[in-house]
Amino acid sequence: MAARTLQELVAAAAYLHSDRAAVKYDGSLLLYRDLVRLAGELARVLRNNCAPISGVIGLYCSDDLFIPVWILGILQSPAAYVPLDPDAPGLLTARVMNRCGLKYCAVKTDLLQV
Picture 1 (tube, rainbow, N blue to C red):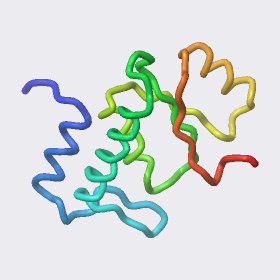
Picture 2: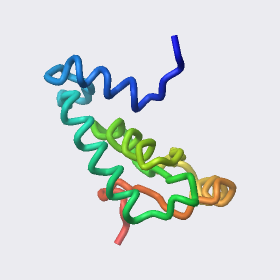
Picture 3: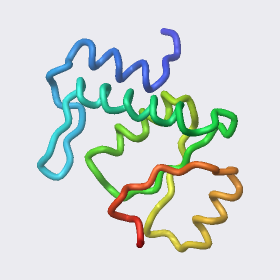
Picture 4: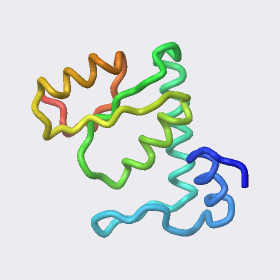
């Protein structure tokens, strides 16, 4: 069996089971068709707005129903994603961002401080 990417495996599952739950979290669910559609929309936004040269995009969020959407969207952009923990000390997060050369980061909006 040939190695396949996560994106390809999810797309294949969505093709076969579009009306089935792909993600269940805290009493909510996301169907495969919605997961693939939303991840594709995010990937387009990232491709249009983030320089593809960087190769990595940070993901700063806590547990959420849409984490798989964000991960798939980033991977389809195409970039690697770097998970950043909002509960980690700021200096640790800054060090990870610096070491990975992060120039772009997807942030769950309720974590933004104004």
